[in-house]
Length: 94
Image 1 (tube, rainbow, N blue to C red):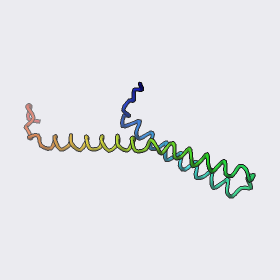
Image 2: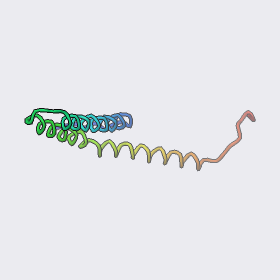
Image 3: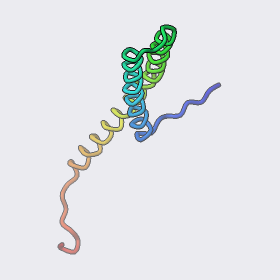
Image 4: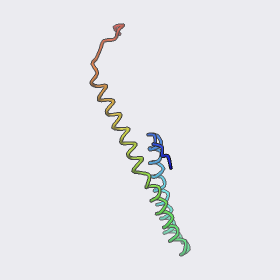
């Protein structure tokens, strides 16, 4: 039995930034491997590793996006509740 923990908002944002950085790094590596005179056997390996690693990282994106959207919706709900509260005068008249 495995126990999965819910991501916090901060962890979800960090995860999305990490996914974006991985995508940029792998894209750069693919461009360098295509433009530089890399050995013929290394190019398919680099492509497979970069595409596979990026796909594996992107598999966590939907969960992180769900956490970010849910926290954004919760913040909007809290703001709507605060707007519904009646305005009262300060007890000291300030």
